[in-house]
Image 1 (cartoon, rainbow, N blue to C red):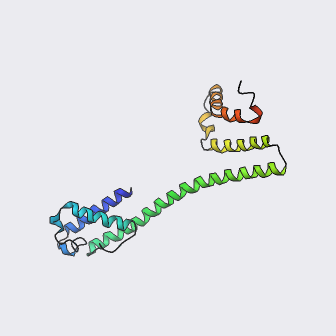
Image 2 (cartoon, rainbow, N blue to C red):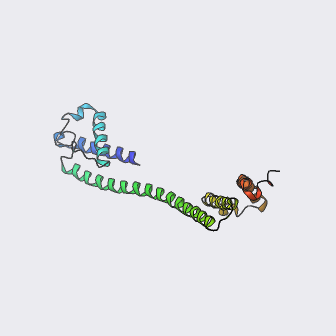
Image 3 (cartoon, one colour):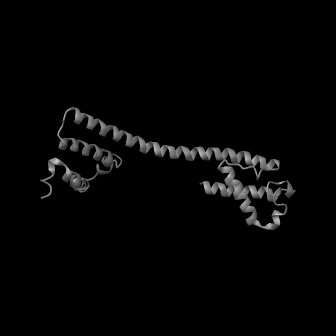
Length: 181
């Protein structure tokens, strides 16, 4: 989206300068008096530079609008850029926060189990079972397996559960010697 916006704005901004009656009174004509004769790629390079500098809000001030049409376009482009930047940052923040919240909830649950096990002096094997259960719960929570599996026959659900959780059960104290056979 950003590349498309930068390209479109650059092309339109160059078109504004190219169509203006007095080339010297345009943003690019101020720097390159004969920009029309130098070719489209020179104009496109200048336009892309301007568009990227404006989009990233750096705004060095070396290329600036000279007439009312260019100034009007710049106003709308900068307003659009603020909205686009806010949208992108908001979505990225939402993704990061969503992942951090799940991690925080799991960390809190593990700390509660460790405190409970320590306070009640539970055996190490029992504490490990509790921790394994919590980790398994949070790993499978993101899969929403109940929704996926609810329409399947019991035999298929049982086979899926064995495939997914056999290793975990084999590592559990209660089943360690019985499942290996």
